[in-house]
Length: 332
Image 1 (spheres, rainbow, N blue to C red):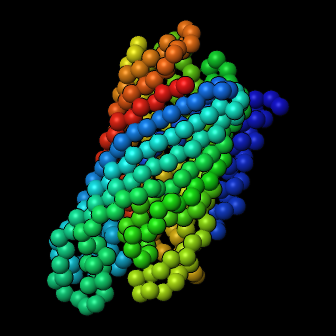
Image 2 (cartoon, rainbow, N blue to C red; image 1 turned 90 degrees about the vertical axis):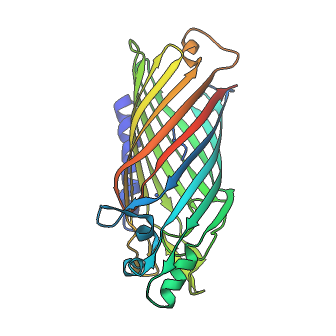
């Protein structure tokens, strides 16, 4: 198979999968293939606070307005609500061959919801909203993600990889399902995904330009709603695209990137929900390590320690995030 044909088939498979399901949303997913018999371990601690969001009109609004089920109810509530997220990410990757890797990702999440809400007017439905958004904290495992990563080709100046996998929610909802405002530890839906990544290397710099995309299709789940009824949720499918530039300055590692997320609206039975999501985020990394020395020969302990920052810059129906974290990547 020629290189052009391989690229066409991988891109076509992702496109057809996304199109066929379009009618039926952490740690960056870098799809780096490692050699046979080697292990890669990555661990990181990241945190952010949500006080505002970008509402359904595309304008910045308080987090309260984004989380309340009925926008008319938010006008009958006084006070504010915010959420603080802390996340421990663990990733293990093993090279079964030079062209096939398997990855396991296991996050642990802490969430604290702080509320000073009170009712200005309204009835029992407003009381129910305030109770749902009352101060509380939860913690537990997020979604377990297992993926199979395959190298399509690798050249001195370019590489292409693709893969697929599934994720399983390990935690449970903290409260009855209430749409996007429900306080989940992580994505509460079982899901499958497929991804593709293209890298262009610039040896004289040295640097790398990376393009990657992922399609995730979630499966239906049944929850209890605020009224105690059993409801079946048909979650919207998600597409995520990354583009970034990486460059080494001796032992110093830098990265600058942009991420775009789009998620279709979910539905409860035949009723479509108003929770379609878009997000554009900017991010950068600054690190220190010995990975560039691998170009000259083997190392006993290749590693990279880096600081990562990501900020929401635009979107629709999404919380505003300014997330910072510290990560370690090592090879064995």
